Image (cartoon, rainbow, N blue to C red; front, side, top):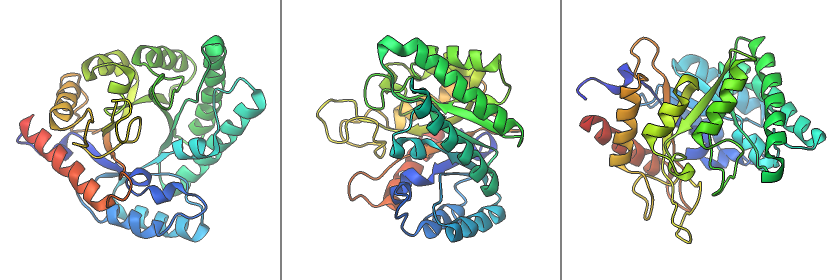
Length: 303
């Protein structure tokens, strides 16, 4: 592809994955400085952030984001995962705890300049799957209605259902079924598809994107290791080219081709396509980010 990618896509980076200290809400480290590293890098047109614990850090980061000319996105996934909260919990008290965190996340996202939040479904038991589906509808409807009052949207990320996170939502057809139900109730709901999760749901990029296409509002790209017993097995989002991993330049190129064919490239309103990459053990976050950029540059050049 000769044309620049930012003509058709807003390339983003998930801050809290690239700099995972940010997910330790008791000690987020130098979160202002790590956000700044992304903000001053004009490779990125979008940034995805999550909860910021300290008021002074939140104020400083908001000031940076307001000046950055970046699209700000907010991921509530770490708030649910670190607290063990489940938006499709059968127990109503537990479901309401997750709902409350998501409502609070909408407020924080609004303050930081994001136009919506993303979240994930929780674990489920096969015997109560239908009930969990109804519980997730209930939670999602409530947060969509709350977000709509602020002219904000809600995005549900599709995860694995039998490998690591074992989330209620995937695979792709089941997520599309859920999204169709939600679109009958609200108009500010969509799905997030992630290249790193597609192999985890035993699907191809072409199949997963075509099935969910009417509902997809956000995109991620990353990697994973599916070989049981191998280092970084599961939904760990290692760098591209990690040993025994499933995604590198060819797979990212295939993903981009599918997105292009299915009409996601948009020069008027380019969608966000964010890297979800995480340093493995003591890897340097900045090196992992550079790896991701090189991988995308190469894939784009072959498109």
